[in-house]
Image (cartoon, rainbow, N blue to C red; front, side, top):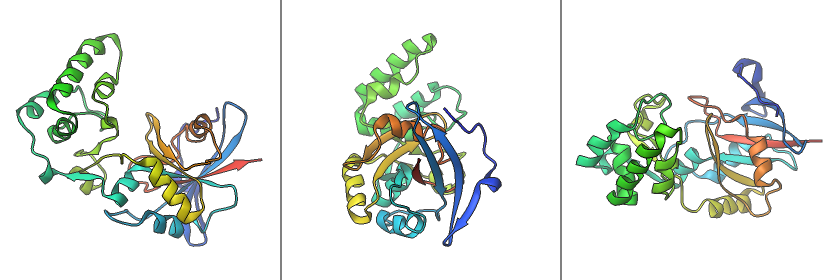
Length: 248
């Protein structure tokens, strides 16, 4: 695989038709297919913005026939308002105590925050969360990770936010919950724009495909190949829209 080990943003920066984007280079998949990826910079998307309008504003000026779009899950959450604010979550006794056993917080991913853990309790129920904590405690010494999220289910692994180190203050006070109808959202966006869409919850640790529009040109494995080096980036790059362009 042709993975980009580090990014020099200035060398990747491009402007075309009034749009700023970053050329993430060409990556080769396991089956030999190659893809160019263009990370398109947007404004900071707020709650309730129209996702189709974002595509028309930022993607359309760069789009070529045959291109596909990876739409960032966090931005979709903001658009469809699949969010919870701190004042909507009230940490109880269990959340205020269990979060301390989540381990060292170095990535921002996890239950290292009572508000976030309370949100999971609200979604899954306390018995399931206690079971998940017990299973995680038993398996962690053996190097098995992610058991808590598997036992909880209901997409709790996709919850993001309530994180004091976030580059954006709003994410310190808000949590985003991956929508429960990702395929429907992709199909609706495809119908409105004519651009094949896959909804991705991606970071430098994993690339979770939540859904894709009907007839999307790539298989799930090819999507993973194209997104393997997380071209959407991290932090404050504001590049949630990735134009995937097959090469050759």
